[in-house]
Image 1 (spheres, rainbow over the protein chains, first blue to last red):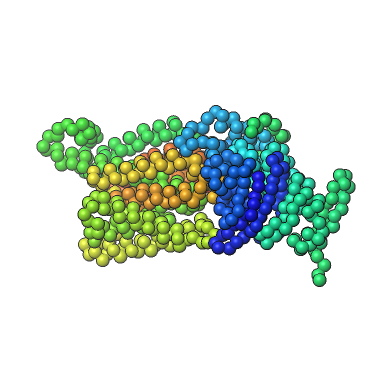
Image 2 (tube, chains in turn blue, red):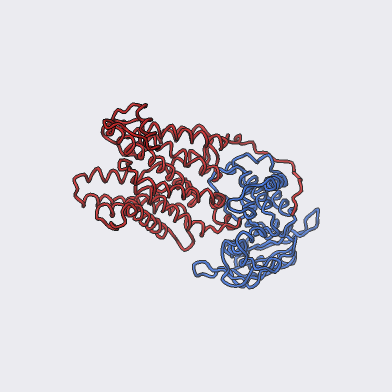
Length: 255
Length: 363
């Protein structure tokens, strides 16, 4: 996936600008940045909830916004931040929605559709949730069902907007490893920088609607950048077991 | 991409058992049978005593073109020209309001939404009244009433939509608040129009438009309403998967390849057309469009393919009986339909909600 010169406007205000981002096939790319930096806006444009004001999102060379909506959804699936549907769908029904871009409006649900959905739910360890009411599931279970829905879409690329929000730590780790193991190209906005550093192959840092740094996590998350962009004092310490750099945070000293 | 089976050990959270859902085909079949029986009851029951045997004979005569003895003409007219179209119209109106209620609730993702709450019904009543009282569009005959109701329903919807809209999109809460406010505005306009027309029956006429009545049913009012309801329900069933996606949120819909804005615009027009056609013949009947979709979801779950199969049938049966009760309860005085829908509907609704683990709004 290639994003070039992307700009997005909402109500005349340019919220992100001049975005260049590249996600190689099968890689897990993280997007980090402070609140209001344009993470969600950028992702919303990538999964076609917003149209770009300039630039393009290309998948294998095809302009995503020039493809039909259904064709686009066959190639790229997303977990938007909203997951607050009030409707009493079962988990299986939510997963079945992933087949929507593959079905014609009046077409019947085929056995193949059912198999794909059951396999997707099984793959996230959610087979036992199938008949449960989606709104009553826990946050982690909901995320698993939504990942299954994305898998049922059979996309090449998966976009996630802060998939670990409101989850306890075990659920956070579980969701990220499920996403990692999906074998898809992943672009995810993440809040927790240590989680981002350990799970992502590459990180893009966004601030004020522009990409300000990118590269392998270790190279990107420098103390200078964390002070500049996030306004925190960061200390890099080696993990006692793995030796991987780990970040400890403190407030910046008042200057 | 093939998805291998590779289940990790599930971490269960307990929680309530899965809600019991009724299978749709038998339920729809039972409701269709109930509708037929209800229609016959609707024709047979009334203040003027016509026996069941006579009722069935008149119905057969009307349907097959048989002959009627001269001294039976009065009773035959009651059965064939008054009660039968009225019962049919009740079924059509109930089905239409229920189907549109389902669509509108998915469209704005709000449990409180229905054509009545959003001001669409009362907006349609304004247009229908303009035709009736001031002879606007008079040259169009029966089509004038439905056409004007459709146009003003669409205008009312647009007005609600534009007033509720912000640069950052449309929040369901704003939409419902705006719609409720507009409802009072449109009702006031209707009342003003009725009273300014000075026809002596103003109060009753206003009541009919604001609370609904099927008292004006004739054969000529059936085809347009029935056509609009059938076509509208058919379209909604056809686009049921899109409604599922829309119910999950605009962002999710986009990610699933459904253009939420485009679908919502189409639903706007369909909802206005069906509401207009229904209000033109029955006034603004509340509660059916709000309650029937909820009851249906409690029975069969939220999947719109299931809901849109069952809800129109359920609404049709309900309104046929509501009309029977409204005619008989204080006979020969007819009660507004809206009074009975509330009287029957509220207890049923509360009972069902408490008995089944219904979650709408996470409660």
